[in-house]
Amino acid sequence: MKNNYNKWFLFIMASVLLAKTSYAQNTPTLKQVFKNNFLIGAALNAAQISGKDTLAAPLIKTQFSAITPENIMKCEVIHPSWDKYNFDLADKIVAYGNQNNLPVNGHTLIWHSQLSPFVKQIQSKDSLLQFIKNHITTIASRYDGKIFSWDVVNEALEEDGSLRNSIFLEKLGPDYISEAFSIAAAAAPQTELYYNDYNIEQPKKRAGAIALIKNLQSKGIRINGVGIQGHWRSDNIPLKEIEESILAFSALGIKVMFTELDLTVLPNPWDVDAADVNQKAVYNEKMNPYAAGIPDSAQQKLTNGYESLFKLFYKYSDKINRITFWGVHDKQSWLNGWPIAGRTNYPLLFDRNGKPKPAYYKVIAVGKP
Image (cartoon, rainbow, N blue to C red; front, side):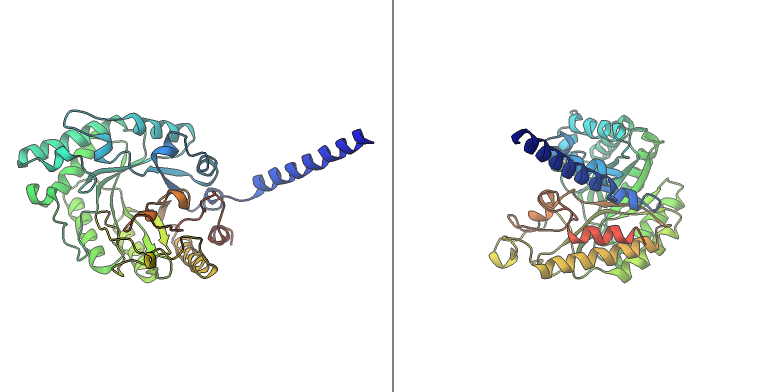
């Protein structure tokens, strides 16, 4: 009798496990439902690239069709001193992408933030220009043909559309952007080249981005696409401006992408839409209202926000090439520490346990009309 019971118990458990496995296999994923529309990407951090984040590992392979390094290709990591480069993690993400058929977008070659200390100490124009040439040529040529694309210049514009007063503009003038794209084109002829920025869906900043792109095109300098980052508030997504930007940028004959998508559910201390990593504010409990968990009301706003956004993306899928989330799951998100350290945010489609949120299912539904 006992043996029969054990047999029945094992049979039932095996049936349950098989049912769960079958369900998991039959559940559509992000990359499956949008495979005929656009790539679905994710930004990977060092733990994920090195395989230490076991929570993210299965999600990366099943849900996403492109990857971007979150930080490890930025200057402070990959080029720590004038004549020293650190390619360890960069090589790993490139190899990981190639092994798993995940196109890699390199991020980023020229950016005023997260620079190595030695760059900030450069005094002369000639030395800074030489840094740009060495930096881009060394890195871009190493991965030419191995990665799909580069964010060549990142966040070069102010909110009014004028050029940002960075070390590059100060010492080299506005032509540093043309110089960067020219060097990248020569170093990586098999790699697509993009301009990437936040808030360029807003009219003034969009106009600045369009002028920047047209300037490159008028000089015959290759630029293949533009990345609208997509750091928005879940209850205040500028859908009208996003739609206008999709049309305006695609009219330039380049690819349009949304490259760093996340929807914050937390208040901004300045009540503005921004993504400048250098902006910081002091912690207080009012600015961290969901430390114990996200309430249904905020979850619903997040769900509605993603649904509306992906309906717009789906409408213009003939003009959009890639949608990349800035992270795999909530636990990873940079928004837990920006602009206030120590907060608990919920901006992505997968929660801190790697489980899909209600917003995930709404997005999937958009891809299966």
